[in-house]
Image 1: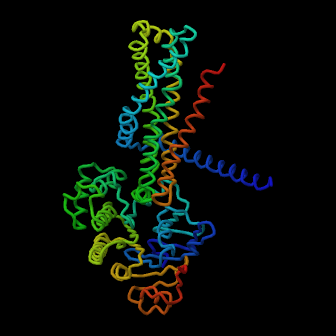
Image 2 (image 1 turned 90 degrees about the vertical axis):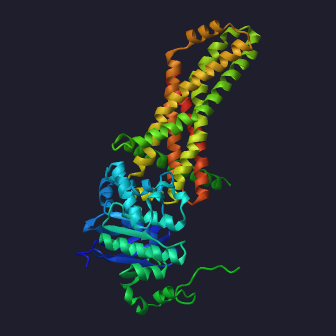
Length: 258
Length: 259
């Protein structure tokens, strides 16, 4: 599979002091595939995404994008590869000093050199694609609800029509209806762009809706991966406990006695 | 008994060296990014307005009262030796060489150093800096370089304005309170003033502008841990910039005036 993989990881490790966050991750994501990585808080999901994006350097291992090794890239090569990526951050990470349309048009203007007027129309179109009107573009992010911020962040992630999109906890902090709206938008945007997607979440409803394939990260290792349709018969006790949200099972939470 | 003390001193020395190395590496990377294109002109102009124009009131007030107090204090001291005529000379030299650049920079460190650390620190903890990277925009070029350039360019202008306002403060006290002849006060001021007095003050201002913005950017960029981390970054930016201003002030003074 690695010969045709859009993104391939081999033996990726990452530690922070004595804490081993990633312990030899092997992962292939095919072009056009939507991969969802599930796992509890602190299991290393965000670190995994940041290593692929180059926001953190892995301690060991290989990360290739379209067959090109990206570990150890210099700033110029990193910026070139970043052109392929779009990212929806957990908290939106919208630039609070810029208006909504400027946030969405940021990549086209600053990185692609698009004229402001043209980029503004692109921003309005992308806002429309996530169900937001032109008038929203004139507001600042602090004037929007959490769900609207997520939609703006999604519009920014797709503004440059990336080949690869990452979604970091896309439904966290949203009510169930808004979460489903965001899930639908993610499916639509990824499908329209024909993009490859990696999402990290612990929301199983979201994982089932947006993913073609699911992998579970536990204690820095991918302990199971397979098609989304197989998740309910994974045969893995850790996966079963996680997807059913049971307190009892092999995954023990560190809880102090009162 | 001495061993724990040595251990503590050793750890403190290592921590100091580590911090110095980290700041130096940050500064080199920032300067390299500042001199290489692309340049974010809109960001540079916006930072110049923020650092320079909007600091004018606070710097102006500091300067005028400093000049006024300087004239008044000099009079109470010099009157004992019948050397009142030296007051314009003392005011102009003290302001242009030392008080203008140092006090203006300290005010800017409090206002701008803290604001830079808070803004960039908040961007760090809310992943806005990571978002810049994913949008193929180098955070050093977009956030750090414009602030450094604006600091280096605008601080000398601010200090020049502070010098003029401070001298005006001394003039007002000299003429309207101490009964100096206005023409004689001005002639004394101009005759005594040398190019090097003003120039050394402007060089100091440029260096202090670099240090203030560098400390703000460094502490903001490396902040972590949410609101508490941003708060610490803000405090550290102001404290470290203030200490560096006093330290570099001595070395620049020695470079210009030591015989």
